[in-house]
Length: 326
Image (cartoon, rainbow, N blue to C red; front, side):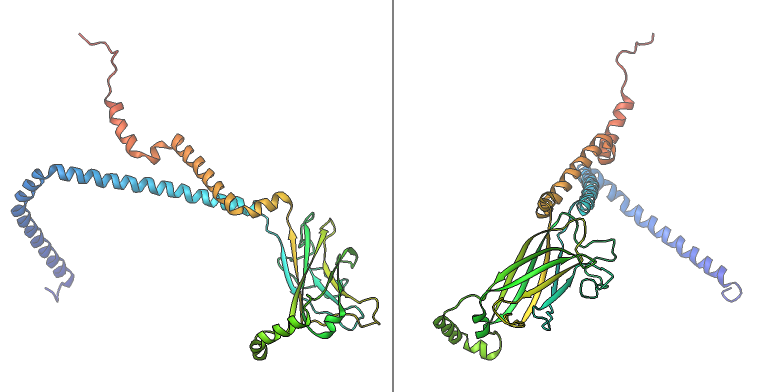
């Protein structure tokens, strides 16, 4: 039969095995059934307690899932609200390459794409998130702070030079000067004995090349507020000392960089400084409002056991004022 009708033989074998398993189960169930019934009758109270505990854990997990869902939704709403409410101050950092072919070395820092070379450099590159002329790098009414970082060697020339001047010109896309700010600077003074003592104490790292005889000056230029006409680039000039001949009276520089930082208006600055606290409190308020709405309008969804417990009482209640029929 396996050769003539293989599928029929397999079906009959499967039915035979199933009948044997059912008979074996009935035999075992009949043998242990009485013992199981007696054990259930003796431990009925414990089983009832376990069932109540299990149902309590199930409904507790159910309510916990509902509350966690409300919490996650409130956090998402709070994050979405903070995304449109909080405005981040803009910060642009770039190295300065001064042109020493001029009497007063000049370096240009593009702030946004200007599309022309009116600023003295090719500004067709995109800086930061600026993608087109319609998008301005710094929003209007924002104060702008320029920090020029200069690394100067402690040479005899720089010490004898004394005070030198750094000027920053804010230029528009057509090369028009919107504002001009300057800041004086000088190397920190060190007397000859102090300089000799410091050189002796730093002899090993100086010889190893870990440190150098230089100073880094941070010149902060403030007082510029962005107006309706956007700033396209910043022109940084090392001004020549008046008593020197053309091309002289400028400091020796190892390295130079600039940091442009925008200062937010008062209200936006407060929001930016307290953004984490506002985010947490907004999420808590939204969560409490969602929970209050759910408790008022969706009580049966959060506590379904209350609905199941109250329904029989409502259905089985009999009005007291119904007159008895004779």
